[in-house]
Structure formats: C-alpha cells, structure tokens
Image (cartoon, rainbow, N blue to C red; front, side, top):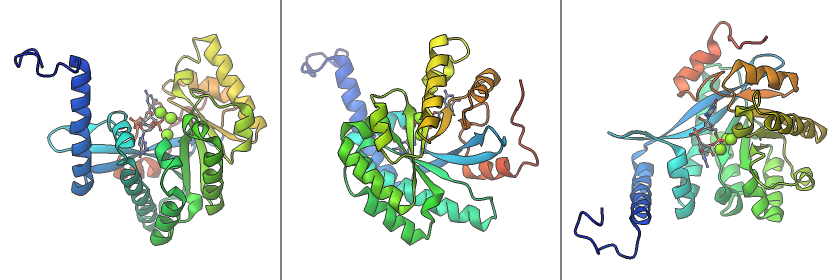
Length: 285
Ligand code: C2E
Ligand code: MG
Ligand code: MG
Ligand code: MG
C-alpha cells in the first residue's frame, strides 16, 4: 500500500481508490491479452418450461479462465470491458462462439433449442450491433431464430428511441429479445409496450424471498400477470428452492432458470444433461 511503501507517493488517491484503479488497469491489460490468448469460455445454463418440465433453452454465460488463477467472474470483468470499449470485441467473440456451438451441437444431433446471449448496454447502443450480428449469422450459417438476445432495462431506457430502433432491426433479422434483470431498472409499462420484446426475466432479487416476503411475492405475481397481458413470456431467474418453484408455477410463470435446475455448465456437461434418460425436475409440491 501507499503507506507501507513510504507514504506520500500516491497522495492524490485514497488507498481504496488507488487500489481499485490499479485493479482495473490490471484487468484491462489482462483482458486484451485474454482475447489474443483465447482464455474465454462459454458455460450454458438450462431453462425449463414449467408446463412440460423439459429444457426449453440455454443461456450462454462467459467465463474467463486465467492460467494459474482459475475462473474470474463476469461481474468483475464485464464492467471493465464496458468502460474500456473492449466489450465489442469480447461480445463478438461470444456471439461467434455461440453460433459455432450451435452447429457443433446440431452435428451431434442434440435437439435444437434457443440460446440466449447477454448484451451489455454499450454493445446495444454503440457500434454496429445489427451489422455485426447479421454478418456472423451469415458467416456461420446460423438461423437467427435460434438466438435470444438478453438486454437489461437500463440499457434500453438510457436511449429509448435508439434502443427501440436497434431492437427493431434485430427482430427483423429474426432474433428474439428478452429483458434481463427485470424489475431492477426504471422501465415504465408504456415503454415496455413500445419495445419489440418477446420475454422478460424476473430478477433473482425478487425470486429469492418470494416465499418469505409478501412484497416480493406481490411484485413477482404482478410482473407475471403484466407480462402475460402484454403478450410476453415470463421467465424467473435465480430459482434455488422447490418452494420458489412451486410459487412460480402457481402464478403461471412460463419458464424457470436457477441452481435448483442446474448451474451454468461447460458444453460437454450440457450434452450429458440434455441426454439424460429423464430429467428429474421436481414437478409437484
Ligand atoms: P445475468 O445475465 O443476469 O446472468 C445470471 C447470473 O446469475 C449468472 O451469473 C448465473 O450464473 C447466476 N445464477 C444463475 N442461477 C442462479 C441461482 O439460482 N442463484 C444465484 N445466486 N445465481 C444464479 P454469472 O455467470 O456470474 O454472470 C453474471 C452477469 O454477467 C450476467 O448476469 C450478465 O449480466 C453478465 N454476463 C455474463 N456473460 C456475459 C456475456 O457473454 N456478455 C455480457 N455482455 N455480459 C455477460
Ligand atoms: Mg442474462
Ligand atoms: Mg439476469
Ligand atoms: Mg444480472
């Protein structure tokens, strides 16, 4: 620290500011190298349809495996990638890798199912997301209908007109749009109605206490009813207990995702998971 190294050297910064600024610099530098050294991986988390109890889709979640340091959470490096602009290259890698995985799984005769890809705000608003995505889809001969883009409310609300235009373009390409972390942002129902979206994912902060907190139960119930009234599919994320799933089933939630079903898994384990003779999703109370 500044003090133990003699003091006064870093007098412009508090210890904490200095350390976090340093940490960011280190991450930024390492992220550039990670792209070159191919240190990113995608894990996939299954989503289950509450009516059929079948896996009905997967969400791709990026993992950074740094030699000697193990996995680094996207919560740590995605914000840095956003701030530095590296997100566009990382995002392009993610999209291309998902398309490659789709054709690999198709070659292995895995039942086709939609795969969700997360887009951060800067990816949606800046750059040429529509061109990039349509180019990669064409290059990899991937049907657009196989991809769901997950966008947060905050990303859409920052520049609502621009976001609406871009989402329209993406939907015309044939992709589906999901609103991620729903309930944590500022979206109004009027705006939501104007956006070309297919589904909403109830944030796991509501799901967590749904069986013990009557407010969270009411909010969740309302989001599901409202989503259905707008013609949207409603997904609950972060489902960890049987009680939470029972509640969601009672409220007619369409799909669930969470550790109760499965954690995010590397591609080989996804194949095993989907090929299991019976998927033991608990269906009754
Ligand atoms: P998200 O899109 O909301 O993803 C859900 C996160 O919740 C994942 O964390 C997942 O592992 C975790 N999760 C799933 N089920 C449960 C559960 O039952 N309980 C709990 N406590 N957590 C659960 P992860 O993989 O660490 O990703 C964190 C965030 O990083 C994602 O949130 C997303 O915003 C971002 N992210 C991940 N991959 C990408 C990517 O490829 N591109 C971009 N732009 N962002 C990504
Ligand atoms: Mg997501
Ligand atoms: Mg989410
Ligand atoms: Mg999130």
